[in-house]
Length: 295
Image (cartoon, rainbow, N blue to C red; front, side, top):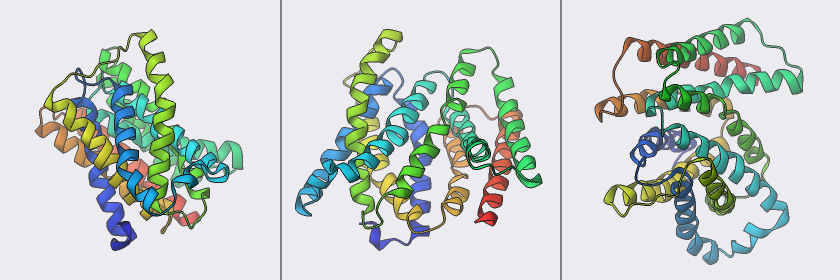
């Protein structure tokens, strides 16, 4: 399926799909609890991919220890934990806030590289970091000490998990197709979500699935569109082009999320939000250009 698209085309397709997922998470509030939404979405994704796995005789490869360790890692760090945190955050904050604050992932990447690889940031990286942090502070200060602030803090405290998942994805054998990775990631992601969903009930997040059209739509989106096409297009892109280049393009998705969120009445247009968006994306883009230059 992905072979008919160039890596660049696949990347832009993944971007537009990604722009809608915070909207989907917000729409699910009160209808489907975060753990259940992610579990049903991952399960639906795997079930849709199952006939293809059987037809291509690759189902057994999902359980191959050499491949399963990578699938489990990206299932946990790219599907289960960060998205669970994101959807819990959306119980309190807005889709545009969540998508903008998600850009702090690059700042975590810079810090982790400095700590574990000894690569000290240069002047451009410092400027990019300052711009990114300033944009984040502007957004946080607008909603300080409010329930929305709680959601914002959850987002910036969890985005580092994505980088871990991307590392494992890049280390997977080259012959594995994006379709296989998507199916395996969904399978193990769903398994991890089972105990975590029940654990969440002990901290005040009950299991909710209301029989309504909105519930069906958000589950279908997460399972059939985001988890399948969004992931396949993303893996088609990053496994065939430089990760920093792909990340640079993907950085623009909060702009689309912001516009969609405002048009649907989920967010309000404000000087704070626009300033935070511009500064955060400018800093993130600068950081990505520095990374790309090093490569």
